[in-house]
Length: 198
Image (tube, rainbow, N blue to C red; front, top):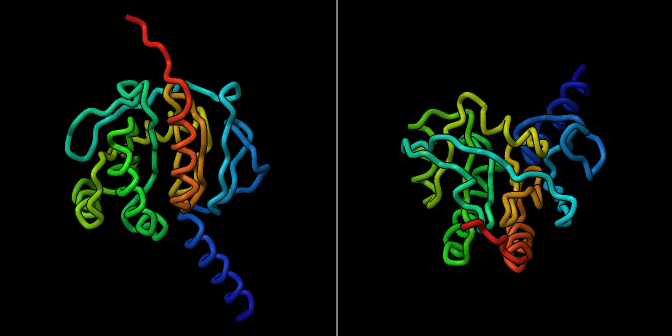
């Protein structure tokens, strides 16, 4: 019995390090409708011709302002699911804040998605980690549902990167390695911007 308790404890600890939500495991290149992986930091990218979208995602941030990723067409968008008591979310917050600041002039937008915390808890987190970008208050789950229609995001944190057309170009399940995320963003910034209709 003690051995079983130790084994359960080890599994729970592993899940806490990898991602805050346990999930099933399938193939590494899964897309919507084909399951999802554990939040182990694994990265999936899609070539331009294989991308799904454009993603339609909007809502209200914790400051009460409307946010809509469609307003950022022509820019690279980084979406990150998080909540305040998630250890990997806390670990990657400084890197995401730095990415947002470092790439602001290059046409990169960062948007958090939080379906767990109330405004007070979320804003305290944002102050603590000096988060310069908004986060959707997704208490109704609408933003997560919009993402689920395109790419599985059951692990928290999950980071999804959209190309300039709003198409899903990459995903990191679990704690995002900052150099990997920046490489994904750099590659998308080199892609040709879409031509907007007048």
